[in-house]
Image (cartoon, rainbow, N blue to C red; front, side):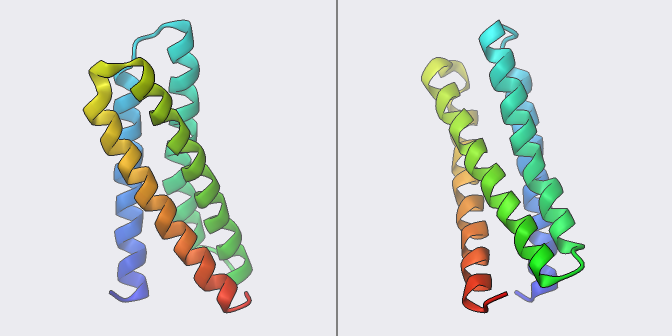
Length: 122
């Protein structure tokens, strides 16, 4: 897959990830504790795709690397919240596991991109 094709593929994938995050968040009850989780997972999970889209429009390789690092960080934070949800809400376990798995895969992709950029000494 060429870089432009991969960029579009990952933009779509991170957008679908954000949609899944929003759906998961919406399915949680509005208890005071869940409101915190809903806010945090929604902010970090939707930030991944927004930052990736910005990375694809970056003005330099250094800017691209910085934005990919933000994607990596936000994905890593997002990984935490499904773990909490799975521990406290067994009704959403299957949906939450899918989100968690996708976050792990996205984190691996962003880490791989950063490693490749570091090897090129950007």
